[in-house]
Length: 78
Image 1: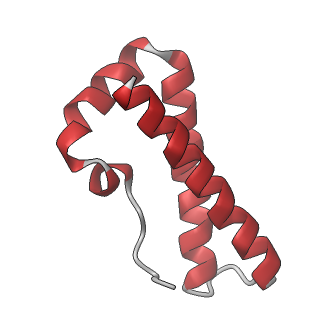
Image 2: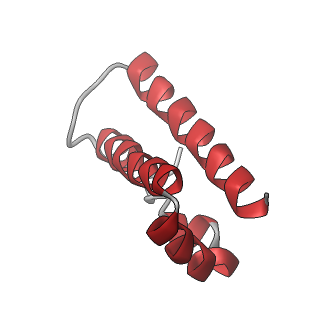
């Protein structure tokens, strides 16, 4: 477990410009990026114990972050 935030720019460094451009023209992509950021923030806060939650809830958040990341990758590569 890492307590380093998984920012989208760090996850897809070679596609940062494409992500920004897509967010401006694709409302769905903008929404999933925003949702990823919110879930990622919640995971990070749980990892550093700012927000205390069960391990099960933390795992659910991690799975949701992974699902969103996969969806973002599909749009970027599609």
